[in-house]
Image (cartoon, rainbow, N blue to C red; front, top):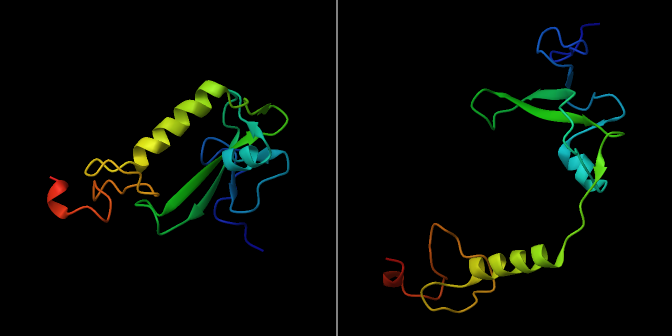
Length: 123
């Protein structure tokens, strides 16, 4: 039986322990997995990585970094100031600079104006 291409639990080939897609050991998680569990890395260093082949990137190989779950800290709670700042930023992204109305959706930066504004307002 041959070993998978990205199997390097010692870190001799890639510098840090490396595992193929879906074969990481228990106790390690990506940032997204930590966030889904209500955790954050909390300043800890990357302890391992997952590598897999992909056509979505230039090099053909994508990576996901892994952190220790037991060293992860809880996510900081949302403060009232941060909540207000996010609401203000989202409102600005939905307000059309051409007509000044709330478009009801985030205005694409490629257009610069809402869909109901005439095109000459974009300039």
